[in-house]
Image 1 (cartoon, rainbow, N blue to C red):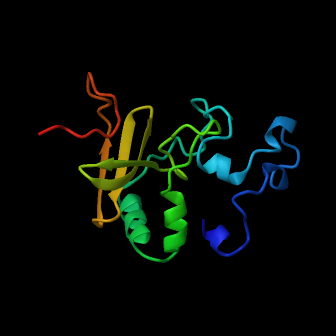
Image 2: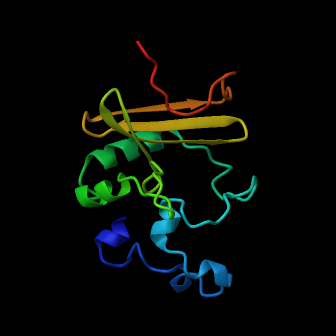
Length: 155
């Protein structure tokens, strides 16, 4: 999004610009489609993710949260674009922005993302209108009966 802000990248540019030798079926895929997971490309297979060997550290996530609360490196317009749900190519609701799931919980807007690899899980959620964030990291795996997603418990 910083490159978009600087006018060095358009979200609607084709992958062909960056990967001229990519398979023909990839050439019409845009940066926007990669960011909002609507490109049709399969998810990475275990062992193929270059970040797999380094789980997120609490200090990294705290720094990222502070950066998201400021106007640098990302402007309000960039964050708004990231945190706007994109429909699927069919037009159906998707609830996903640029790397963030978008929802409303307890009447509040929340943007979040979770993930994990062999032996750890992490979850990062922001309530941008309340200036509230929380991070959960565990190496205990997913509790039995849990969907692993962000849920609201009825009172």
